[in-house]
Image (cartoon, rainbow over all chains, first blue to last red; front, side, top):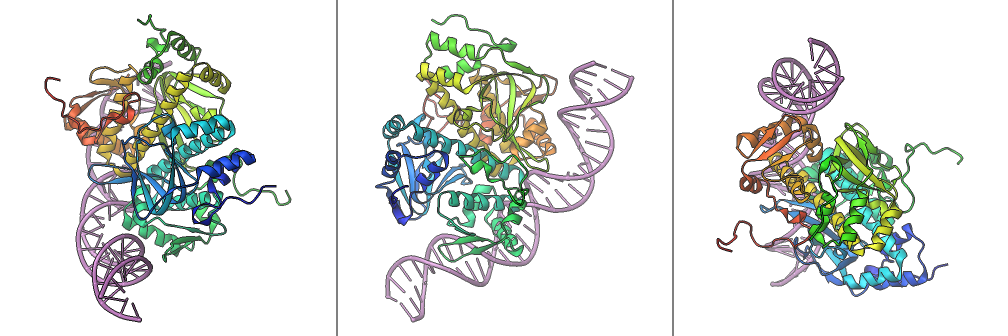
Length: 264
Length: 264
DNA sequence: CGGATATTTGATGGCGCTCAAGGTTCGTGG
DNA sequence: CCACGAACCTTGAGCGCCATCAAATATCCG
């Protein structure tokens, strides 16, 4: 039904397209337009700052490959990671209505980012209103993720927060077609995880160890690092993880979990 | 230049209009349209839930009077307040692209909320593109506030967080025309403040006491409760508060603070 | 005045921070 | 192939910020 897909940097089929397809049905013309967005990106190597809090925003960024993080820093160096952008995620969507960044942007390891001007995106939205709708949904999802993160940092214990973050990343990577089965890539250092959850590096380490000792996950420390989920139901229960906030298409499952009927 | 303004519930001139004027110049027609939005609201008395996490969203809400909070709860009762909506703030702006709530909504004390259908808002946006732009800016500001809250909860100490929250509310109330001078209304109980900052009620109490003992604020405990800021520069320094993330119009002040020239 | 809600204060303890040192993995260049 | 440095992970010891529990006080409302 659909032809072979354009292959983006690092040889993965477009995660952005995949995510948009979760929200709307995409015509061939629209598919082509999306694929054109994810071209000619700038490659970065290590941890590199690509945008500064308060700086003018050059437009909208698309993460072609690698991971990017959004963070805010205090004057004495304390840092809070606001969110992670995975391949197919869009950076600075707010640039469409506000031309100043309110966060720092850093790459994590290798990453490829494409910048598109506000005008280009607005033309795209005019030509393809469906795409505008789908991408606005991505923005709503971002806010839902932010709320969930705030809940973690404010009210969940360390082991709950860490578990919840791992499950969120696993889920997002699957939705983007970047993870399958029980394993998923984990480029984040324990320091970065701590900065996302309001924890110290040391405590993230101890918490991961506990999760391993409980037989819930296995951490593969060889690069490229990865996580293997050994007991999904148990860690989901521990984290109180309900993936509905990540689903763009269908409404969230309002029934209690784990009560699917046998022959339905 | 501008005629007498329509007076909303509780006799305060439209805070929404005032905030929109910070972002764009408003024509008389637009002013009338905004004022029509803030009519015929439903009044609520105490702490009342007006929307549930995961429930279908009836449309967009406008806070005419009183305060509303957005929160998420864990199954065991722990609660995180995501943000506060003051008079003139808009609730569920995401309903325009996503028809499910991802937070609970509760009133704080007396409040009046008007619900407008998605269709009505979309018609408004079509008729007045400038208004659409200004209101999208309000949405961006919401995200900036959320990021700042995450920074507080994750990385600031209790005394820094509490100070920062107080300053944010003071500033927002001034922008909405609901506070002037050094005093501002404070309907939030210490429990609610704790739920917003990831702190216990007891610790919020002790922290407020410290701020009073340091001579930075005075808490008026008689209802309607209020806060008086006694030493704005000092508490702003303590909190690391930079109000640029709340300003919709002008770009943020990139120069170091407190260096205004004498005769300028 | 009585009941409900919110604030205040003390005592105690734990989760997670800090400091410090040693181990691992990996990239680079000899 | 090995040496070396950088970044990251690991583990222990000690402690502090803030949570929890409990009880008294204050404020408001009817």
